[in-house]
Image (tube, rainbow, N blue to C red; front, top):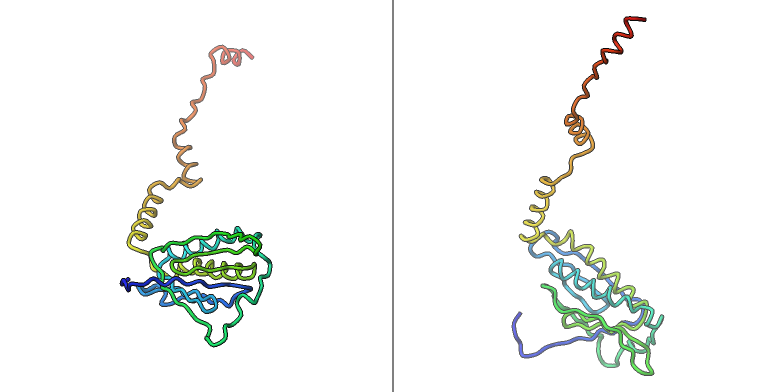
Length: 202
Protein backbone atom coordinates (compact mmCIF):
# COMPACT_ATOMS: atom_id res chain seq x y z
CA UNK A 1 0.00 0.00 0.00
CA UNK A 2 1.24 3.48 -0.86
CA UNK A 3 2.21 6.03 1.77
CA UNK A 4 0.01 9.12 1.39
CA UNK A 5 1.19 11.21 4.33
CA UNK A 6 -2.05 10.67 6.25
CA UNK A 7 -3.72 7.97 8.30
CA UNK A 8 -7.48 7.68 8.28
CA UNK A 9 -8.98 6.02 11.33
CA UNK A 10 -12.73 5.52 11.36
CA UNK A 11 -15.11 4.99 14.28
CA UNK A 12 -18.40 3.26 13.50
CA UNK A 13 -20.95 3.45 16.33
CA UNK A 14 -23.42 0.56 16.43
CA UNK A 15 -26.73 0.79 18.29
CA UNK A 16 -29.36 -1.92 17.92
CA UNK A 17 -29.57 -4.73 15.34
CA UNK A 18 -27.59 -3.87 12.23
CA UNK A 19 -28.36 -4.19 8.54
CA UNK A 20 -25.65 -6.65 7.45
CA UNK A 21 -24.70 -8.49 4.27
CA UNK A 22 -21.97 -11.06 3.64
CA UNK A 23 -21.16 -11.85 -0.01
CA UNK A 24 -18.58 -14.08 -1.72
CA UNK A 25 -16.89 -12.66 -4.83
CA UNK A 26 -15.02 -14.62 -7.57
CA UNK A 27 -14.79 -17.76 -5.41
CA UNK A 28 -11.91 -20.10 -6.17
CA UNK A 29 -9.91 -17.55 -8.19
CA UNK A 30 -6.83 -15.48 -7.40
CA UNK A 31 -9.12 -12.44 -7.08
CA UNK A 32 -11.46 -14.06 -4.54
CA UNK A 33 -12.86 -11.88 -1.77
CA UNK A 34 -15.58 -11.81 0.87
CA UNK A 35 -17.36 -8.56 1.58
CA UNK A 36 -18.89 -7.85 4.98
CA UNK A 37 -21.20 -4.86 5.14
CA UNK A 38 -22.47 -3.54 8.46
CA UNK A 39 -24.67 -0.56 7.72
CA UNK A 40 -22.51 2.03 5.94
CA UNK A 41 -19.22 0.22 6.63
CA UNK A 42 -17.91 -2.22 4.02
CA UNK A 43 -14.89 -4.48 4.46
CA UNK A 44 -13.40 -6.61 1.68
CA UNK A 45 -11.50 -9.62 3.05
CA UNK A 46 -8.92 -11.14 0.70
CA UNK A 47 -7.70 -14.29 2.46
CA UNK A 48 -8.87 -16.97 4.87
CA UNK A 49 -6.44 -16.00 7.65
CA UNK A 50 -7.86 -12.49 7.76
CA UNK A 51 -11.43 -13.81 7.85
CA UNK A 52 -10.50 -16.06 10.78
CA UNK A 53 -8.65 -13.25 12.59
CA UNK A 54 -11.59 -10.85 12.30
CA UNK A 55 -14.02 -13.51 13.49
CA UNK A 56 -11.84 -14.28 16.53
CA UNK A 57 -11.77 -10.59 17.47
CA UNK A 58 -15.56 -10.42 17.45
CA UNK A 59 -15.83 -13.70 19.35
CA UNK A 60 -13.50 -12.27 21.99
CA UNK A 61 -15.73 -9.23 22.27
CA UNK A 62 -18.85 -11.41 22.52
CA UNK A 63 -17.61 -12.66 25.91
CA UNK A 64 -18.37 -9.16 27.22
CA UNK A 65 -22.00 -9.23 26.07
CA UNK A 66 -23.42 -9.41 29.60
CA UNK A 67 -21.64 -6.18 30.48
CA UNK A 68 -23.36 -4.23 27.69
CA UNK A 69 -26.81 -2.63 27.89
CA UNK A 70 -29.59 -4.70 26.38
CA UNK A 71 -30.69 -1.60 24.45
CA UNK A 72 -28.62 1.56 24.08
CA UNK A 73 -29.74 5.15 23.68
CA UNK A 74 -30.81 5.52 20.00
CA UNK A 75 -30.08 9.26 20.00
CA UNK A 76 -26.38 8.39 19.82
CA UNK A 77 -26.78 7.51 16.15
CA UNK A 78 -29.31 10.17 15.13
CA UNK A 79 -28.70 11.87 11.75
CA UNK A 80 -26.67 15.08 11.74
CA UNK A 81 -28.29 18.07 10.08
CA UNK A 82 -26.70 19.23 6.86
CA UNK A 83 -24.64 16.10 6.05
CA UNK A 84 -25.41 12.79 4.43
CA UNK A 85 -24.60 9.68 6.42
CA UNK A 86 -20.95 8.85 5.56
CA UNK A 87 -19.83 5.45 4.37
CA UNK A 88 -16.46 3.73 4.75
CA UNK A 89 -14.75 0.97 2.77
CA UNK A 90 -11.61 -0.96 3.70
CA UNK A 91 -9.72 -3.78 2.00
CA UNK A 92 -8.01 -6.23 4.35
CA UNK A 93 -5.43 -8.98 3.84
CA UNK A 94 -2.46 -10.58 5.64
CA UNK A 95 -4.15 -10.46 9.08
CA UNK A 96 -4.04 -6.76 10.02
CA UNK A 97 -4.03 -5.83 13.74
CA UNK A 98 -7.27 -6.60 15.57
CA UNK A 99 -8.50 -6.31 19.13
CA UNK A 100 -11.51 -6.09 21.42
CA UNK A 101 -11.81 -4.32 24.76
CA UNK A 102 -14.62 -3.42 27.11
CA UNK A 103 -14.77 0.15 28.37
CA UNK A 104 -16.50 1.09 31.63
CA UNK A 105 -16.71 4.91 31.67
CA UNK A 106 -17.70 6.37 35.03
CA UNK A 107 -21.36 7.35 35.13
CA UNK A 108 -22.06 6.13 31.60
CA UNK A 109 -23.11 2.78 30.06
CA UNK A 110 -20.40 0.30 29.13
CA UNK A 111 -19.36 -0.08 25.50
CA UNK A 112 -17.27 -2.53 23.53
CA UNK A 113 -14.53 -1.47 21.12
CA UNK A 114 -13.67 -3.91 18.34
CA UNK A 115 -10.78 -2.74 16.17
CA UNK A 116 -10.15 -4.22 12.71
CA UNK A 117 -7.19 -2.53 11.08
CA UNK A 118 -8.11 1.17 10.74
CA UNK A 119 -11.80 0.76 11.62
CA UNK A 120 -12.98 0.85 15.23
CA UNK A 121 -16.49 -0.40 15.98
CA UNK A 122 -18.08 1.27 18.99
CA UNK A 123 -20.61 -1.41 20.00
CA UNK A 124 -23.31 -0.16 22.35
CA UNK A 125 -25.77 -2.99 23.01
CA UNK A 126 -26.72 -6.63 22.60
CA UNK A 127 -28.49 -6.26 19.27
CA UNK A 128 -25.53 -4.54 17.63
CA UNK A 129 -23.06 -7.09 18.95
CA UNK A 130 -25.17 -10.09 18.00
CA UNK A 131 -25.64 -9.08 14.36
CA UNK A 132 -22.00 -8.06 13.87
CA UNK A 133 -20.68 -11.32 15.35
CA UNK A 134 -23.02 -13.32 13.11
CA UNK A 135 -21.79 -11.46 10.01
CA UNK A 136 -18.11 -12.17 10.66
CA UNK A 137 -18.86 -15.76 11.64
CA UNK A 138 -20.50 -16.22 8.25
CA UNK A 139 -17.48 -14.68 6.51
CA UNK A 140 -15.16 -17.10 8.31
CA UNK A 141 -17.35 -20.03 7.28
CA UNK A 142 -17.39 -18.92 3.64
CA UNK A 143 -13.60 -18.54 3.56
CA UNK A 144 -13.05 -22.32 3.41
CA UNK A 145 -14.76 -22.52 0.01
CA UNK A 146 -14.10 -19.04 -1.41
CA UNK A 147 -10.31 -18.79 -1.18
CA UNK A 148 -8.15 -21.27 -3.13
CA UNK A 149 -5.55 -23.08 -1.01
CA UNK A 150 -2.07 -21.55 -0.94
CA UNK A 151 0.94 -23.57 -2.19
CA UNK A 152 1.95 -24.17 1.43
CA UNK A 153 -1.52 -25.45 2.27
CA UNK A 154 -1.50 -27.78 -0.77
CA UNK A 155 1.91 -29.17 0.22
CA UNK A 156 0.73 -29.68 3.81
CA UNK A 157 -2.43 -31.47 2.66
CA UNK A 158 -0.42 -33.74 0.36
CA UNK A 159 2.03 -34.60 3.16
CA UNK A 160 -0.83 -35.35 5.56
CA UNK A 161 -2.51 -37.59 2.98
CA UNK A 162 0.73 -39.52 2.35
CA UNK A 163 1.40 -39.92 6.08
CA UNK A 164 -2.16 -41.13 6.59
CA UNK A 165 -1.68 -43.91 4.02
CA UNK A 166 1.72 -44.97 5.38
CA UNK A 167 0.69 -45.08 9.02
CA UNK A 168 -2.88 -46.28 8.64
CA UNK A 169 -3.83 -48.96 11.17
CA UNK A 170 -5.04 -52.24 9.63
CA UNK A 171 -8.75 -52.95 9.70
CA UNK A 172 -10.32 -55.66 11.91
CA UNK A 173 -10.26 -58.30 9.16
CA UNK A 174 -6.59 -57.65 8.46
CA UNK A 175 -5.67 -57.88 12.15
CA UNK A 176 -7.65 -61.11 12.56
CA UNK A 177 -5.97 -62.86 9.61
CA UNK A 178 -2.52 -61.80 10.81
CA UNK A 179 -3.16 -63.12 14.32
CA UNK A 180 -4.48 -66.42 13.03
CA UNK A 181 -1.51 -66.98 10.76
CA UNK A 182 0.98 -66.16 13.50
CA UNK A 183 -0.53 -68.57 16.02
CA UNK A 184 1.32 -71.95 16.02
CA UNK A 185 -0.77 -75.07 15.49
CA UNK A 186 -1.38 -77.10 18.64
CA UNK A 187 0.17 -80.57 18.39
CA UNK A 188 -1.98 -83.57 19.35
CA UNK A 189 -0.84 -84.93 22.66
CA UNK A 190 0.30 -88.61 22.49
CA UNK A 191 -1.73 -91.04 24.55
CA UNK A 192 0.41 -92.36 27.39
CA UNK A 193 1.51 -95.97 26.96
CA UNK A 194 -0.04 -96.96 30.33
CA UNK A 195 -3.47 -95.68 29.21
CA UNK A 196 -3.19 -97.63 25.91
CA UNK A 197 -2.34 -100.81 27.77
CA UNK A 198 -5.28 -100.38 30.16
CA UNK A 199 -7.57 -100.06 27.17
CA UNK A 200 -6.42 -103.41 25.75
CA UNK A 201 -7.02 -105.17 29.07
CA UNK A 202 -10.68 -104.10 29.29
